[in-house]
Image 1 (cartoon, rainbow, N blue to C red):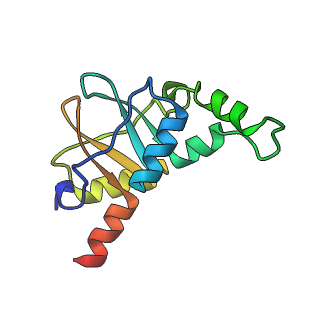
Image 2: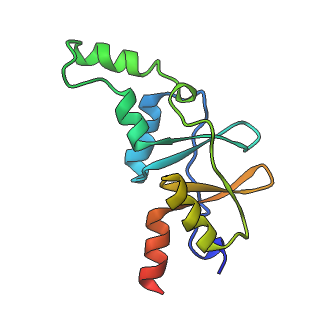
Length: 134
């Protein structure tokens, strides 16, 4: 069984030059937890997760005013907080292989590539949903 059976092909992405505030907005709007980072040619250069965004955000103990905090967070670029050593999987790979990689590496998603270009994404939730409904 190939990965295409469970993957999402309409992938929401972000550029390395986008900001933390933009990433938070996109993830909330789209209700997603993983955001592939792609360059102008469509190649995967990183992944940012909801956990990355939380870790890069300010602590509740900050003494900054809200407008000061938002100003500073809007200066944080995605390329400074994204995971850069992205593990990807080729389109056409076995679904079981994707699941094994995610378990072994302790990751929640795999960008799916054709050559160097992003083709889709598969998450733990996608795999569970696939098996729960088949």
